[in-house]
Amino acid sequence: MKLNELRDNEGATKSRKRIGRGPGSGKGKTGGRGIKGQKSRSGVAINGYEGGQMPLYQRLPKRGFNVPNPKKHAVINLGILQKFIDAKKIDAKKPITEDVLVESGLVRRKLDGVRVLAKGELTAKVDLTVTGASKAAVEAIEKAGGKVTLPA
Image 1 (spheres, rainbow, N blue to C red):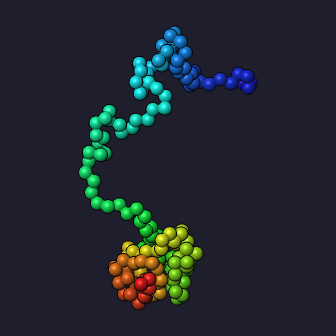
Image 2: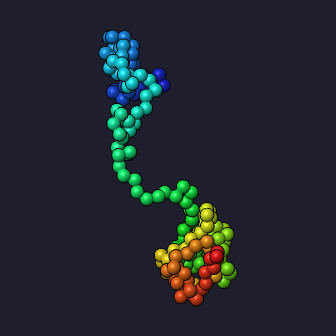
Image 3: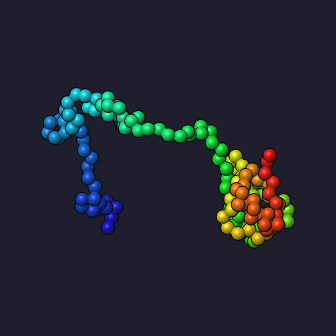
């Protein structure tokens, strides 16, 4: 086999459809777009437009309120925290702050703060300083003999 003998498999390639190239092509003149009107012209984007009828998204009732700038917290669970303490990535004897959690790799970035949730078991006695914690998480930490400090 030589380089000049290389060929694609039969039927592997298909030539593209050339629109607007004469009547013999079968797609000449109007190029399969019909005659006149918005859709026959270039630069048309009419998604969701219903020909002047009130669009579906406007006909449906709206409920509730969307906060324009919601707080985004980094979330950690007690089970993961215990796993990191067992793996000696976090020292439970020292106070654990948000910066310690970031350095250990438990949290990638603080965002608007770190929030602790109660999923999993915590057996280590920890002194935790975070932005937020669920009631169940605070109870679980205090039950293990630790304490949680939250901003006022």
